[in-house]
Image 1 (cartoon, one colour):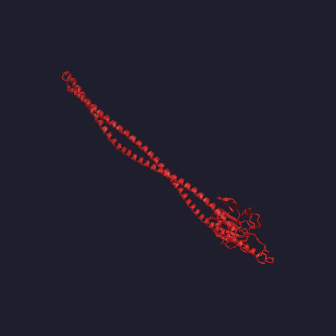
Image 2: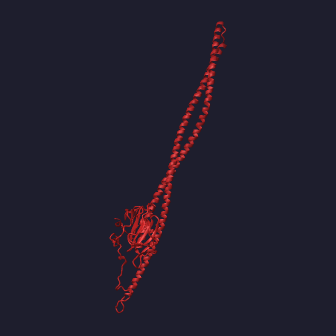
Image 3: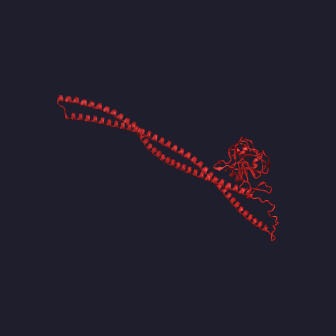
Length: 429
């Protein structure tokens, strides 16, 4: 992936050779090595697109689950709010009754006390009247004057006494009932208050869950937006690479046609004359060594001629991600080196700076043509070399800087031959 992104910075730049055999950059594809680079770019981008699509699918599923959880929590809040509303209404009714009772109880208590006083007074009076009637009744018996009126008065007084007692008992019973109802309403209010407290706590809990899930959902929205933007950019780059591949394919077709025409022309020029002699055309192969491009050595290992040079270690540090290791599912075509702050970054050999600038995701980047079709890449550094500079082995072309300028978490170094990656690990032993 790292190499794929670096290659994107040179999507319009192709590696070729001039007449002196020096590797140069041009704006048109010219060799099989360029086609390999574009093919590798296309594969890397396809892998990244697949990764981002997987990430988008996973994030979308998480988003759906969070949205469902938020909806469920909101439904629970709505039910809880309905319960709270019902409890509050019931509480208002009970509280109004309790207030009414609390107003009636003192009045009823006063009435009972007044009646109790009056009953006691009436009972005493009735007892006195009855005693007086009884006394009169005895005198009447001795005198022979006991009458029916005397008996009637005694019955009346007794009934009056019972009536007063019944009234007192009735009022006292009502007062006792009011006290019991008051206690019952008070307990009911306490029970409702406990339910309200629990319902309010549940509502706050659901709101907290919603807030947490909404925050997570917002992060997922940001991630989805970012991934979709990355996907859009990668698809645009993929389209450009496909366009480049088609251009290279067409150029290869045209080159094949040109070679075929040249071969046919050479065959005609080399055709024996009528006298059986051989043409002296300057295009004749006699005395000229024909070079087959396919015979160029493309097996790049640590024992290649370039690697046998007295090369300089580009930067001090430990390899964090080695050559060929996978990073985010994409093969690493260089090495990522951990380092100390502000350490020097050196050119591994003589060469010419082909690129010096910034590349998103890699920080500042330097690309050097080291000759013999070798190119070296240094990224995540603080640049001290300019495009076009000629550098010597060990010459400082930058520094490691600090973590702030190392978006990959270290200095990334890559070495290529004819556009193909070479394992540079021996430089760091």
